[in-house]
Length: 130
Image 1 (cartoon, rainbow, N blue to C red):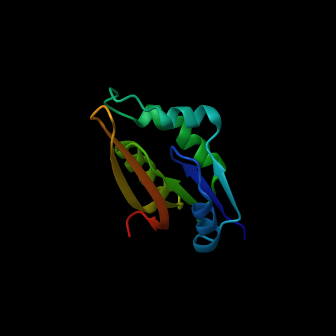
Image 2: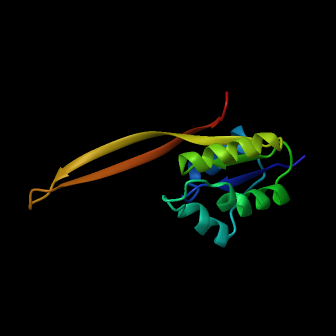
Image 3: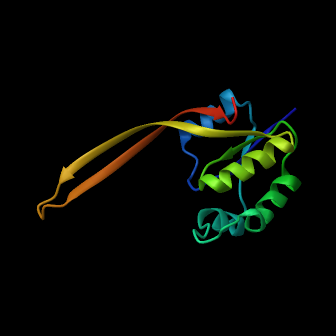
């Protein structure tokens, strides 16, 4: 039976993530949010006191698109992630997140400012709640 990794996060999938998704999650394909839903997920208003109504279109898309057992990569706003992880678990989906190694380098600039560069590299997908 084929499986799909549904992507609910703010970045592009890198080659290491894609290869790991096929190898460790056993997925055949990766499916991102439709453009209008991606814009919603990428720009959650910080002044919203509650997110349920705001996230309703994303939940509806996931309900219509995913089947029980499908993994869902959920990363972003902490509160929104919490709500979607719970929603995914209630529907029999497998919410995961990407773990990374991180490198930071600082470079003194001629004007006295410091340029900070971060590099992230995917390591594994980890299930929420395990």
